[in-house]
Length: 58
Image 1 (cartoon, one colour):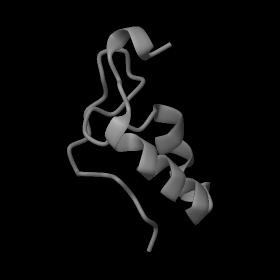
Image 2: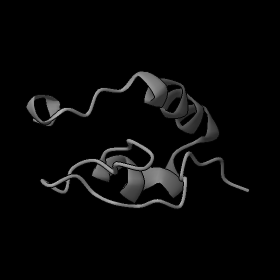
Image 3: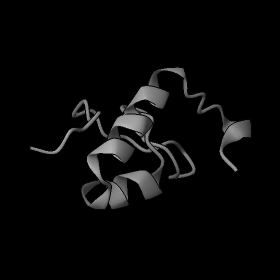
């Protein structure tokens, strides 16, 4: 089974860049299944502190 931070509350921010449920970037979501477990764990460790305020999206 692939580790995932998905909380089954998928909703992209108004720009379509970040998921408001899990805070992953659209590119992270798209490539998630191809990431090695070490990369998935690294991203999941960063998510709790990830700021997805509009000014940080680009």
